[in-house]
Image (cartoon, rainbow over all chains, first blue to last red; front, side, top):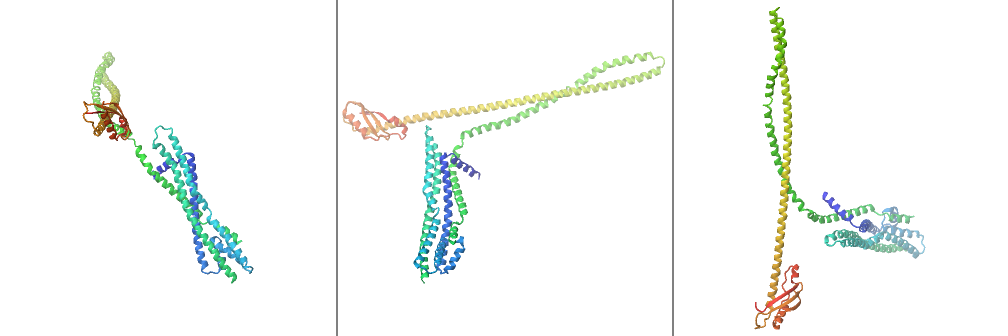
Length: 226
Length: 323
């Protein structure tokens, strides 16, 4: 343990001896990295949960359950419902309000509008913070690079006062500066990977939601006609 | 109502805190990686920091320090001898003074007592001779007793004096001993100092010898290096000449032994930059042949050490017609 402590001290020393701007860049990168990882995990849980709920609901729905009972169950279980369940609830609720038997096209149109509104809201929720991950993925390498370039500039500027230039004069400064790039890349790489994965996941979910909306409107139309 | 409730429910996100904890964990792992990554860079400098010079002198000093203790043991034996010697003179001294005093004092006091006692019996002799005799006997007894008492007192005094003297002598002896001890300690210290000084001198001498040896070595090395350099230079000059000679197509039947001198400017690597005829041999055919040979023999052989190239930058080449 004692050895790791001294090494930790040397690592801290390396960071603390960097110039103010490099330290600032490192601080920003640490914060960015932390928030990006936080969102990565949050979105991971949200999207996994969403996919599982969607699978379950589609299972239940196509097994031919009574739609009224299903609707009742979903509205009673407020906080445990998935996006697709909420879309179904919105559509079926809207359809039921028109059940007095007016124009079929108007009923279907309003039902579809209700479902689309909920769908938009749900997609908005699913895609929230994904733009943050994309920004982190594209910007944090540049921030890290800025810190590195600044650090290297400083180390070379200090080299100008030395008559005999050796690599030992520049090396620590560059090592310091490169920590900034390392941090930037550490923040960027997982953010990019996570963004791509979650974007494709939400796209898949969106197509599933849309196709379900079409199928549900067909089912409801048949139900209204028949 | 149901729609608004559903909308609110959609923002209840699962496991936000767990996500935060996981994010912190990931960063801890990253920091650990950074620390362990720098770990590798930290070890070589530690090896470099070790100063051989600060450690070498210590072993030289330590053996010197270890010697003094062995010398200290010898001084410890020396003080023991004076202690044995000094008690001896104590014994002969005390017995003499008591004898002298005892011999001198009693005779002086006896006459006084005798003078006081004798006149009285003379006046009272007639009335009672027996009584007088008795009285005289008693007086004599008393005198004897007094004498004995006086003797005892004198003896006691003498003994006291003896004791005092003895104690004084002992004190003196002790003082002497202390002085002797102090002197010995001082001697020891001086010896130690001398030894330390000697050791220092030896060290200095050794250091000087080392320095001189190093200087000699350096000088020898420098001389050797110079010799090597000159050897190299002459060797490669000979090689260059030999190479040029081997390329010369000698014009036949020239009279005598004409000499052509060329000044050649070289580039690093042995390429020829410029060839100028500095002194003609008097035969154009020979001069041309040598010039052609110089150009043909490029690259010229040069020593591998680039530091020596300065010696070859501008060469003066003399070519004899006959060797």
